[in-house]
Image (tube, rainbow over all chains, first blue to last red; front, side, top):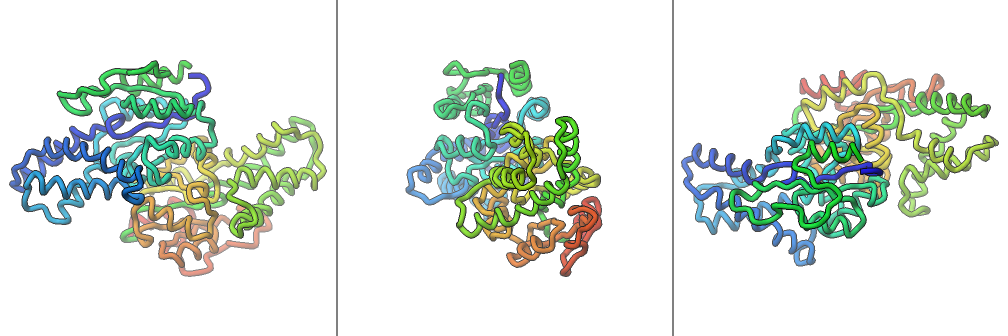
Length: 236
Length: 236
């Protein structure tokens, strides 16, 4: 990709496996504590609350609220809905911080390390900066720069996020690529002039995943994983 | 330092040698191009314009302007004052980008690598994000997070910078340390509740340096270099 100086990554689903990580962690927690629950169902419902909760911020119904706090509010609702007993405030805070401990996909770290030799690599995530920094330290993701939604006070796909990152990098949109496993994120970035790289993550939503199984537009790069994305950027 | 979760570094003078780097680079440039000039004088005058130019932004006389652009404006004035001929727009842009190529002090990279094992490490600089990212990539500084003044729209010592970094890290001020070679920067951070670490850089301003030769208050840590600061943080 001639002229791409920075590649910014969506994080949840694109570089880390939120569903597998949370189900494993909560399942172990439940076993340890003797709390039987549909942990996989809870995790899917928790992620299901993600877009609606951000939409309340985007629409102005809620003032600016970071993702950690949205996660806590939706968790409290879901614990009641799933009728899970025995979870105190410290337990819930620990569960919310589980989003700071998500594991990278197996190809992530090697792919980012390769790409870092050729371009600025960073996040462009709806996660907040603290969450993203904790993820990176625990998972070994050597970002050059961490852009979280709280830097911009906006959630993707609000244009303030994509364009704000370009502004802080002092790069034109066509010099910046968004890499994501989600077609809608890439469509928003392309509409603002950014380059686009699609990496399918067909297991992100579990075995029944019905969305984002393939590229739904002619993105600049479509690559099976991050190392192959890095190779495509390098060959451009 | 019990409870310090993040150490944020001032950059110019504290982690990189702006004066030595720029004098070496501009001297070589002048020799290559056959332009005789008082390059050391120009560099000192350029840095001399730093605080006054930011003060125009802090006071509201200038709207928000990133450091790269302040550097360009002061360079243009100084080239005229020093009567240096033959520098076109591309030359001047390259000279301004010299601030993106400053070399770390010899102890910097090893010290940061050690500290990174114990705490979040980041920048808290009046440089803009793009400048800081370029410095880090070229110099091998493995920051966990890069805070530049353009994230906050304020220059240190405005409180929006120190407190903005704490807010984005979701840490209380007493969990964050500012590390700097400048007593005034540390005084501003301490007034807001941050921890403080002083690293003298007695050569920062050249052989005639008369300021910041020693700690002027009882900072939480006073260390000869960054590895010793890292050891002090770890032993806390």
